[in-house]
Length: 251
Image (cartoon, rainbow, N blue to C red; front, side, top):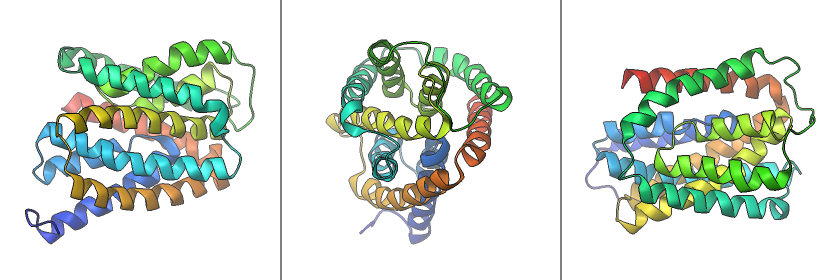
């Protein structure tokens, strides 16, 4: 089925996808695991990014279904925001080739560290909703497409940015913010994937295999998050942001 890859490489990619799905469904940052794994397997950078978008769709879909089935996110009311996230990602992917990557590489690590510090030290960080700072309409028309655009251009940390926006601006509790983040991240993944697929930068067989593994991992991770709530989401989110920042600084 995978004639160009040794069986141990295929197993490595499967394990990486499962672990990424588990972590991503709770705190985001699954690409921190799968993209290096794909590069290690010998995929070209653009093909690694495109294949990662394909398998990420499975994980985000799995987590979204799990959260929605337990009433943590209303898919109908969030559909307009999901569409805007999708369109933002498509636009971001369209300009990815002309935007200097060095700008994002320089700005992203301190932003991720700031997010980690916010979640680490903000008092009363729990699953209780609080007063929102902007209206849902303004949030959906500005914040959502901007983060979707970023996900299309670059990607790493998009889930963390959605989480921060939902907690700090929309007033969501941590678990509710996680659930809504997965829906909008799914939409932005679909937008980015559409752009990569259009130029043929996707390894379909490996992407689908990893997608199945990520779907299972995300389902388990979402179950853990709903059971443990902020007690597991908060520390994992902080660790994910710091590790992602460190990796970007290193590269």
